[in-house]
Image 1 (spheres, rainbow, N blue to C red):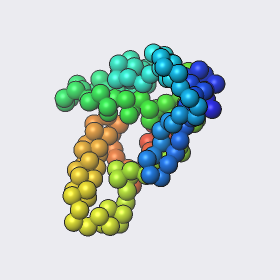
Image 2: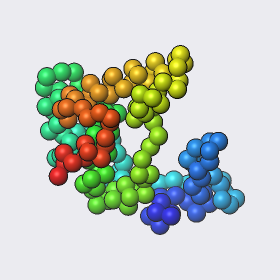
Image 3: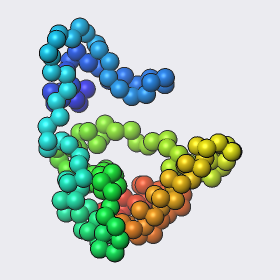
Image 4: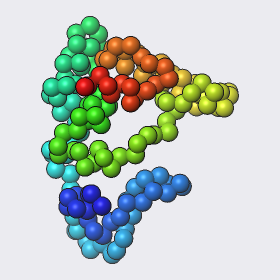
Length: 158
C-alpha cells in the first residue's frame, strides 16, 4: 500500500509473498507496453555513499577504516539500515515501518539450529558468514553480543 500511495509502484502491480517464490511483485492487471512500473527516487535509495555521509554511521565507518581495510559497501548499507530502524530518516520512515520485524537468516540462527544442517555445505557457509559478520560488527560497533541481538545493538544509537 505504501509503495502505491507514494507513486513508487504501478497500480498494475501488487506485492506478493509466496512460500514458493518469496516476496516480490506480480501483475495485478494488464500492463501496456512502455508503462512505468517502478519509480525509485534518489532520496529513497539506500546506498553506500549515503551510509558514509550519514552523521550517525559515517564516523563509525571512518573509525573502522582508520585501523583496517575499507568497509565493504554492503556492510556500510547494513550499518545504515540498523540505525534507520531506530532513527529513521523522515523520507524512509514509512518504508522502515513496513519492513518485517525480524528475518529468519542463517546469520542469526542458534548453534542448535545450525546443528540441524549437520554435514551440509550450507552449515560451513553459514559458520563462515557468522565469523565474518562478527569480525565486521566488532570492527564497526565494538563488542559482539551472543546470541546476535539486533534490537540490543540498536540501543547504541540512542
